[in-house]
Length: 188
Image 1: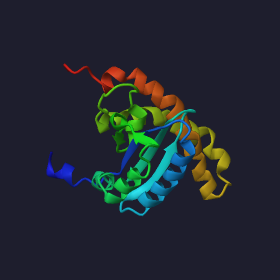
Image 2 (image 1 turned 60 degrees about the vertical axis):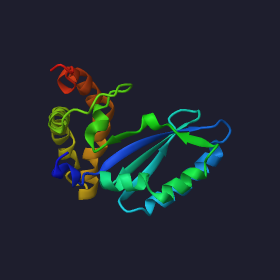
Image 3 (image 1 turned 90 degrees about the vertical axis):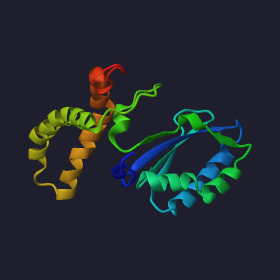
Image 4 (image 1 turned 120 degrees about the vertical axis):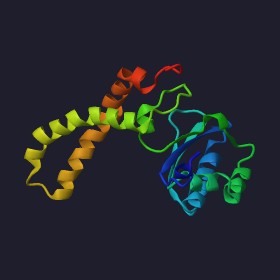
């Protein structure tokens, strides 16, 4: 690992998965509020979100940190260990389902695989290919009709339209279409 990599200060997002014993969900949800407050006071924390995508015993924590070193400090901290002791018998962290990203990787994830994220330049180029046509379209169709709006409202139109289109439609299609280029076979 190079010195540059050791001192990188790129934000990082990690997803932790928890398996909760049936019938103990309310206790676990109360615990999530407490550990979230504790984490929010920890240096480098940029937020924690809890997801429960389906009914059942699985919960996912999305942790956002200023850099990988501070995330590692939180994961190894005494405070976190104390909070984990509080839920023994209630829930367990599913260790093999921890995923960390530094940005656009979530648009390029391959569910059910351990494939590495593509190089950033490939993610950047793919995102540009997806965003550019819609940026032109928004500039052509929407911008002329909003010139009388206050600047904050005009500026809000662009991300409100573009981000959902990219996240739910364009990027999944592009990442599937460019799969062989983004994720070449190991022998290449």
